[in-house]
Image (cartoon, rainbow over all chains, first blue to last red; front, side, top):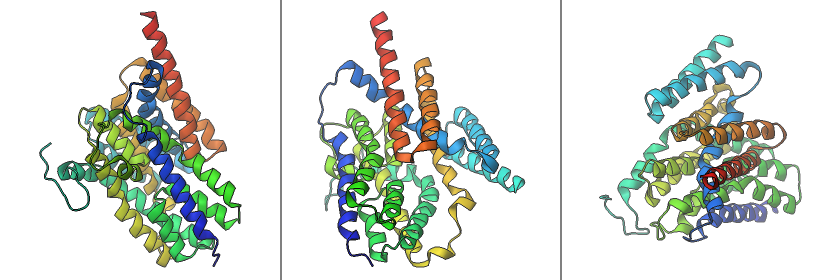
Length: 101
Length: 240
């Protein structure tokens, strides 16, 4: 066992915590318009960035993921319930995967 | 809010806490195999059982943890490890800034406690809840804490009996994450600029994900696309 791992692990925990706390710690103040607009687009930008690389993949995974996400997107628009969207998306994904293997 | 109050350690709205905790329940399915995979890699890279579990308890950020154990296993210097962790987790600063806009000046639980539970998931569900006209600090707390039992248990399981559990990639459970964020994203797309920002973020993310890891991909594409959105909005407003 490497005894020197422990300080590094604790230091990574501190750094991770600081990244989480920084944004919250700035207090309430009125930011300039550009910054306020920037902040208001963070949800859309971050969500899209979290989705795209996990959906658009090559090889065997390409079709099941694209179609699963596509049908889930339709459900999200029609039904609007998050868990229905997830359940249907997973079902389609698993079905297509099972067919292609 | 009508929820009862707990006064033992922390004061917060229990009904809102429950609502947040329930909202992210579907993601347990994805977090569990992810934490198992992390624990298996950590043990394979030479971390002790205690170190493996301690990191899940203190760091509680799956993707960063995978990167850390990888570097530790390759005997990378401490400075390089800490620098990598900082970059991988910088997106939390954006989440914190975004949440700070909607959270009240005083929160229950207080901000230093809320900070520890910020993750892709808790941020996503909470900011959507606020944008839908609800949202509360206790909802954020609940949505963040909700994942922890599953995450800890999976780490412990992966540490002890890791090899027996089937590979999560073969089961495809990780697909629950993009599906969730897709469902969070779509109702937010109302104006043309919204669509543009989303498409640009997705394209940047696709490019970046080929050359770098998840945390940096999200950081880079979010900053890039949100800057574009802010610039476009500013132009629209000044043109009026």
